[in-house]
Image 1: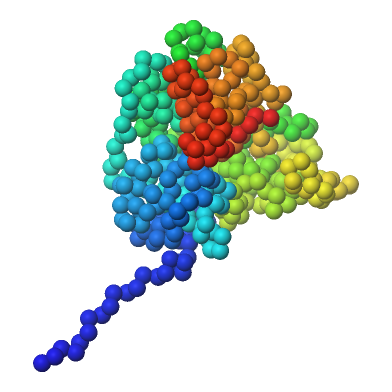
Image 2: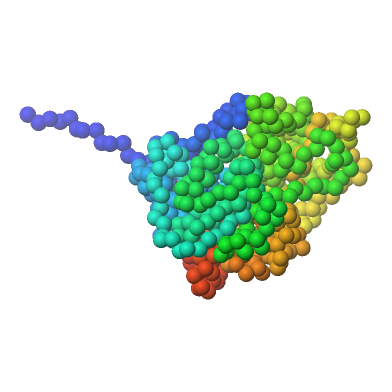
Length: 498
């Protein structure tokens, strides 16, 4: 007797190009505006595998060209798609020490994802979200292990600053066999990752985990060391350091130089975020760091730091007005950060420019005066120049003002270092390909050279510096631009000081 019952065919997987880009789960806007827990929640395994299956595995992947540290993007995504997150994190750590950080805060939409071939006709692969997935899997399931390190070379390198550039350089040099000491001015390592980026975007436990990883490679951390005061670069060279990498960032805040900026209740974004992030002011009185925002706060600026400041003030209970002299289209912050801010209730007061801050009889902020603007012809940045509308001044009642209009180099280190060439803005002049400075044995990279930039560009500078320092200490010629491009997958690692 013949059995005519046919076995059901397994369900067909959707065709790669038909799979939409997978959304990342988030806390609801109203809920997250009341807490400092992480906003985005990450992919689960099923979603990560589905998103990874969208990658078309190009023979000549353009995405790698957009990555400042040259991650083998196709390879780690393929491993995720095969259900091998352990292999994916191991592949990532061949080129990057901080996948959990980069997966959260790097502007992939302007770098690797912008080059994604799939993105020409469809949404690009969510490279950053997949990187985060692999890193978070490792944290939940155990370490992928440390990479092999070369035999000790008997040379010592000092690294100034424990931000992304310094940590990357130190880790790379340690793997090459060098003894490395990081000198950090603050009482915790991590630099801008720990004092500048809020908990809801980058949990500090993740930063500490990445710092612990670098320390596990043999790197020594010396905290509360202010180079230029506790110790100078010249003394470091005299005291046994064979080479030095300066990665002390650009942490000196800029102001607008308008009347009233010296009133109580006016913060630089640096001070405000440092109090909240590093000093845990948002958990006062558990942490004895007061921070006053009142009922209404004005944030001046529209970059990522301004968004971080505004969203932090909102979580501290204030109504927040973000004041920016251009329109929505010109806002320099990441689209995701602007979207999150608007969802949470930040009030965008656009095409407005502050003219003065007005205080009360006690010397505290009471109001901010702005003048309405309109956009004229493009300026040197390519954005249309804001022009004030005569007679359009108006006032907004506020209890605090946070100024987020950029940062510059702190002169404490540079003024105490002999023979170090600087730009007009006070940044260190470094060769764009090798990061070599005018002082023998001293290299520099990250924000202290380029001015404020991204975490991943600073990491790229750290990798370039490590490679140059290795060649310098081995008596080999430093690499030129073409050789750097072949080695790293990108020619735009450190930027050029100007």
